Amino acid sequence: MLYIHSTSCISAQHTFDDVNFDVLNPVVENKLVAVEPNSNQIPNAVLRRMGKAVRMGIKAALSIVNNQSELKGIIIGTANGGMEDCIKFLNQIIDYDEGTLTPTNFVQSTANNIAAQIGLFTSNKNYNITHVHRGLAFENAVIDAMMLVKEHPNSTFLLGGVDEISTYNYTISLLDGLYKNEEGKNNDLYETETAGSVAGEGAAMFLVNGKKQNAQATLKAIQTIHTTDEITVEANLKDFLATHLADGEKLDLFLSGENGDSRLSKYTKITEKIADITTLRYKHLTGEFPTASALSLWFACNFIETQKVPTNMVKSGSIPTEINTILIYNNYTGIQHSFMLVSR
Image (cartoon, rainbow, N blue to C red; front, side, top):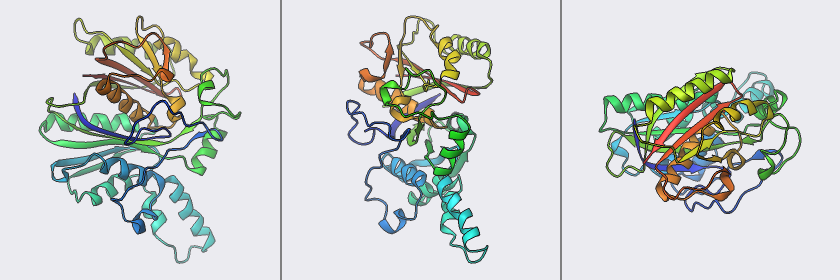
């Protein structure tokens, strides 16, 4: 169990500082590109050398890390790190015929650079780790944080998920069928009966510990599954709810990670069997990427804190008058699945 005390989110929508769900930034060329906020905490000379994933991670982290001395660890989940800088470095090897290369692109491209840079900016020499597990990278970071908090309940940790749209990864994923070939709009994402989704990127950060007092939300449980069998997913979902929902406790919202890919509709049908619950969708706001589940957790925390839900996220049902418990389901490419249970 994790108690979440502060959150921040950088996405393609207005989720940083002045949160505004009424203004919907559109899909452009099948991409939902993150809106980067300005930051006076990072010197321009340093900022211009950073890749986008690093910039988003640091900006999101610094906005909630106020008392740096209390931070006992930094735990980040990412699938690709700074892939754009990695490709730049590899191109340099060819361009300079393996001669004198600038190390900046190489240093900025490693997956653990996001957590490392946050550690440098906060002068933090404690636990620092990056989980790289494709569509379950953030979930594995969550599990790591849960184990640490169980051992050290009074210690505060920074937990986050970050990924960027790189030209290389987008092209490979497009050829692999992860993204749609035809142009679309946000609101049409779930209506098209075609394969693929739209590309997304973003960063979400959370300050977590084992202290309930003044917590914004509670992450009660998490479960991950590797399977392409929808029957296995359904059985695990039922067991998850039976195990972690307390007697008399009911779900108020179901936050679905469906992404408009017609090939994954069989998993959507499973989750539709959850009766009498309002279902929300969010990937028309964020796009699809491996650590999009980090943003879904941020959405859940925001709904619990504000007790408000944007109407443009509602798939079915009516918005409850009181929001206490939210179930999050995400799957990445129909292979990696996760459940998270969030409550007040």
